Image (cartoon, rainbow, N blue to C red; front, side):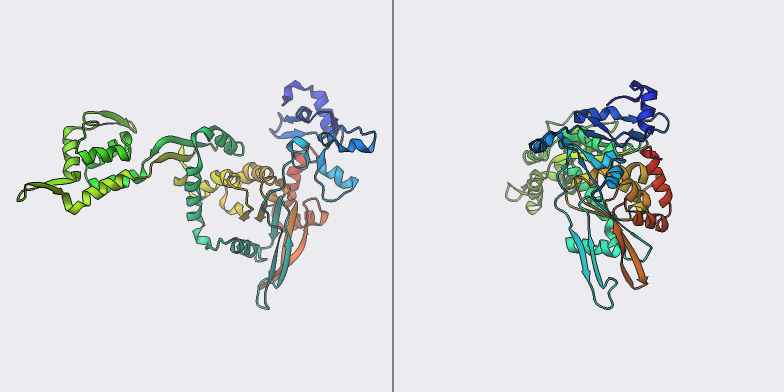
Length: 446
């Protein structure tokens, strides 16, 4: 990318203020020369670019490598001019033209009786970003719940925090060391400087199940038991330790010293004796003078079970150095939003994300996630925040109206370019006018 300081200030100012719709370029990579980071406000400034297509006959229209793809609300010179104002979301060249997101929701149809909130509702959704807005009580969350029901996610709202925690755990299991750098880069490119997500990966160190079984074997109380459990988890695999117990031979670890979390731990002969007393699978039967299984074979069964303990890598997602699952629900939501969004390809339905996000993140994170992700995954958002649909460059805005406190309907729908939709966004959503003004400044529009 061409750095701003490498471009003469006079040329840059001319390109940004001359009122050009676009500049013709020969190669897609040349577009980088018309994009700068402003030294004034830190925002990225663009000049729209299109590929040269100097066709001299009909047959030459077959050259796909010279085609510029432009997303417009409808065909026409006015819509073309409007689309060129937003090159980052509206202009694509053949090499970066995304495939349509699949699977996707084509639309929503609800037919209800006389007592239903929606008696006869039909909504078409865009393949990229659809935003549902309206006054409170107009039925936005009802539509989200209907989609959740159709998808089979029939869980109550009070379970959402638990679901988020479970999602974090599931995603952590999917992370592997060779992908850590790329995963962290994907996450942090959306986050502000004061939020840093990192991945703590330790091969073979997911000792949760191992620790539970050691506790069942050795007991849960006592400093000595706690120290031994830490030591064994750090240096032994379940199979290796179970084999030592089966043979009643702990010599491979006796006398060793290690450091765990800045604490020095050693395994002494007293520790060996304590472990053997609690785990020895056989004991002497004095009357018969033979070895028999201790505790009716309970110890032996525990040792055999220990050998089958799941042994996996340890992965943890950290926010500013601390495990994200130990943060507040709002902090977890903010940090995990990029990962949750990027984790799958199925339609993503979000109900009022602004309720659970730091206000600062709506503009700096959520808009970037939505604008980037919507080309790879269909997104449907119910929101009261105008920055989400304006900054996300929504292809479809659905405006709900409340006919009464027991009946709702679709009032209007259209793209974010539609003048009627713009007027409704400004009228219905607090900060709507400011959101459009911010977009103008971002793109250097007057």
